[in-house]
Amino acid sequence: MTQTNIIDKVTRVAIVANGKYQSRRIASKLFARFKEDERFYLSKKDPDIVISIGGDGMLLSAFHMYEKNLDKVRFVGIHTGHLGFYTDYRDFEVEKLIENLHANKRRKISYPILQAKITLDDGRVFQVRALNEITIKRIEKTMVADVAINKVKLERFRGDGLLVSTPTGSTGYNKSLGGAILHPTVEALQLTEISSLNNRVYRTLGSSVIVPKKDKIDIIPKRQGIYTISIDNKTMHYKNVSKIEYCIDKKKISFVATPFHTSFWERVTDAFIGELEL
Ligand code: NAP
Ligand code: MN
Image (tube, rainbow, N blue to C red):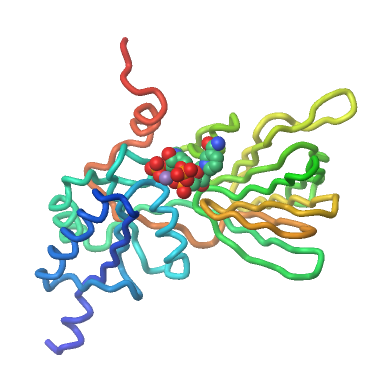
């Protein structure tokens, strides 16, 4: 066996953690553990596995750090707070995680992500990706925007703004706005209103709309001004947005498959309901 073959078998691991004491403690424990194991090579560059330590918010950051590597990378989340939607392992399950990385060399579970093309009046175009959602709001005045699905004009929206979420993002901001919870394996996008104006003069659908894979949602702002666009945990301000086009990205996010994976519905009831007294 040549040297190259041996190197090929080594799994490159990147560890990212939030600033919490508990997260940094686990990160250093993992560092030490991986350093003494020749089957793993610690590297922030071009990793096979990205271990995110913290909460769902930290995993969102990890996703954006490595969004150019989606073809290759598999993510794993370790939660140091409460059980999350993107985090599978608890802080004391580090050994279990390493065992699983050995046992399931390439097994993964993949979920859809959101792609958006933002076009400004001055001609600039930004292509972005989101794991949870993208929102567009106009803060200074009512946002007026046309909404179209597959070029069919659905409505003229008036209100604070609009949100488009992924299935895994449906339990985040989307849910707070009254949107539906979607199982992460449903390949769809959800369009949800943020405080729409509804009266005798102005009319919107009022409910969230769930669109299947391949369908495209366009939002066309009708007024000049400053728009606030959030992409997961990042917020940007743009002058005069002419259009945002949303679709499900060709790429997906992959997670290391976990044998004892908590079911999605268990996470939902654990996160939003708590102890059930039946
Ligand atoms: P944050 O303000 O620290 O966290 C917002 C909360 O949302 C945290 O409890 C976070 O979990 C949780 N969260 C993130 N993704 C989730 C998901 N897919 N399903 C269920 N809960 C989720 O900000 P952050 O941690 O950077 O997260 C950014 C996200 O916050 C955005 O993508 C958006 O979904 C959400 N958000 C919600 C509202 C709202 O509900 N009104 C407003 C703005 C943003 P952890 O504690 O595990 O990090
Ligand atoms: Mn957070």
